Image (cartoon, helix red, strand yellow):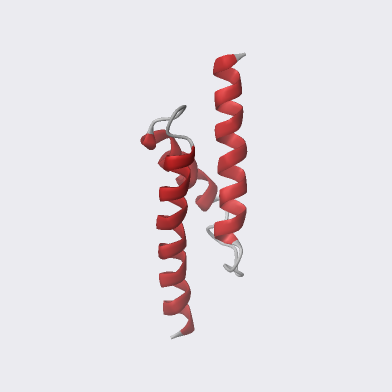
Length: 75
């Protein structure tokens, strides 16, 4: 039961993160770019036994990646 609840939590957290970041980066990135960055970040933690912090860590990685992408296009 706990594994199932954890999976539901991750799905909800990922959906919320997708909404937040597509909105936050809407002026500079296509939604597909944001989703692809989230997919890459999430895969980094695919085999992590502790899942509680995956959404937080993925969010940080994605923000850093997208900010770098934006800076690269502007610079």
